[in-house]
Length: 275
Image (tube, rainbow, N blue to C red; front, side):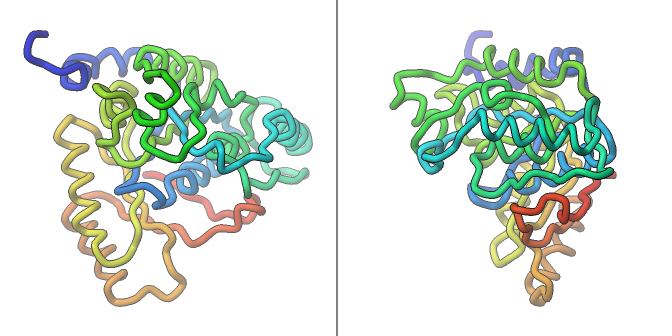
């Protein structure tokens, strides 16, 4: 379409295609910024579904920061999940009877999500693009002599959603972070077509950041499932309590909270359910 960038074209024309091709119910987790706990929230959502006995897949279009995990061993991580699935009676889904849920501490995001979902997916199946330096995906890809291909991402997402009951997708950074020079996380979310969960910190400044993300999402027709304030303190300050109430009123959406988690003990994580 003349005059439109690739991102604008994807947002304006591919929403129906996304709805037609998705194979499972799902959710897309984004954040108001980086380091706000998107992976933690996505993991708890996946863990909640898996503990119900559902077959859960996880997906992340691109992950950066692999060089922060020099000792990571994919084969060992997969083996731990396979053993846990057997012990938990998770041949088809999660389940919570017997067995031990493997630790999710000290793992890169794709592996953390796999543990939470008890998924047999490989790293390639969860995150089709993984780069060493912790930076925006478009920059990390450029430094590696690559460019994130939207078609490859969408094909991987469709494959991940095939044959499962639910899929939990996690973005990179915030909605307007570029995955490639012409394709953003928001464009990816639109194509996937899943309701959005926005993760935000509970403290000062979060009202503005959260509402900017809400407006960015709704401007392209994304449905907002919930906002999660993370990590929620045991004794919230008046500012934090008011932020929760004010964001709920302004956004007209559920505002949930999640306490700080022990990633070494997923079995102790609280449930996180979306209405």
